[in-house]
Image 1 (cartoon, rainbow, N blue to C red):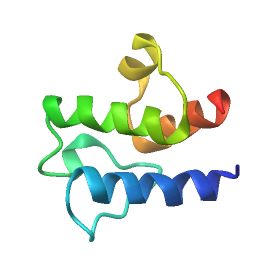
Image 2 (cartoon, helix red, strand yellow):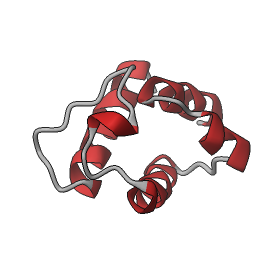
Image 3 (cartoon, rainbow, N blue to C red):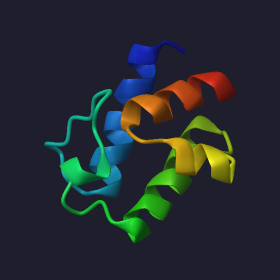
Length: 79
């Protein structure tokens, strides 16, 4: 899977989780960029990403991800 394909899938996931078809995530997207992205939505988002990519993040991975680019990096390492 390419980085572009990961981002295409992440965009679909973010749109679904936040119920907003206008969301377009990129390397630098953070929780501050999406109004509804709070701690509870973060748990839902992480679980959905894990399910969709058939991976499991370690707690240190989750804490260390400062933006969607870092999430994509870790996904590519785990798949």
